[in-house]
Length: 143
Image (cartoon, rainbow, N blue to C red; front, top):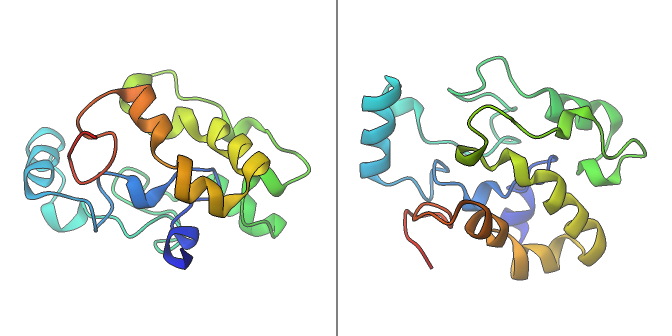
């Protein structure tokens, strides 16, 4: 449970279920990202936003949401007295391809049921419902 708590981003993303997290990344997906986006294969695997200080090939400048949470001293954005805020706004461009649009929902569920219960019972479910694709639940497999 402790590792999954550390792998829950302040914005509510469940890094432990992400397809590019180092524990889930398949050779096939790494090859696909390498070919389609030109990212060197050794830069694709992610350790989680907290472990990489919000920096990754898709966010080389870092994550403003993580920076804000650290500055305010909160572990999760839902613990902030300004929740929800503009940092949690959904992505409009290519929305069907990014899990970032589920973060506010996840944070609301975490606030309601608690982080531990959310991790055990609900994390990843919105990915599956929202995206409905074979990479929705991590490890490149459908449930």
